[in-house]
Length: 122
Image (cartoon, rainbow, N blue to C red; front, side, top):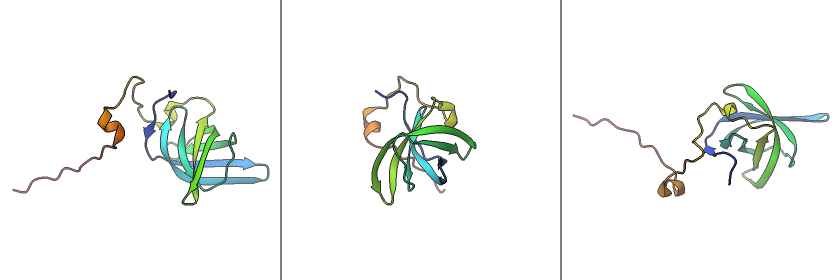
């Protein structure tokens, strides 16, 4: 069971780290977020348990994270899971679903798509 609910949202973030004399900085977007971190895609090479700084580009807040997992490469980038050094749901400035919330079966298997309303012509 997850520690906190995941929200599928693309939020602009910057990941940076200093490794001795070397450093990197990469702007990307989240795939999912929760109170404990996020999932992103990075072109930069990182190692599991490496410390990085994550900056929410909208709020300009920064948080230290550790690389929790690294996925297989796809399209020149890897899926990277980042975990905050301390839980911080407020970092995202969004409302998370309540802990006991579970989407209905049909919504869990298929993403909901919003349909724009078009006014009827008279």
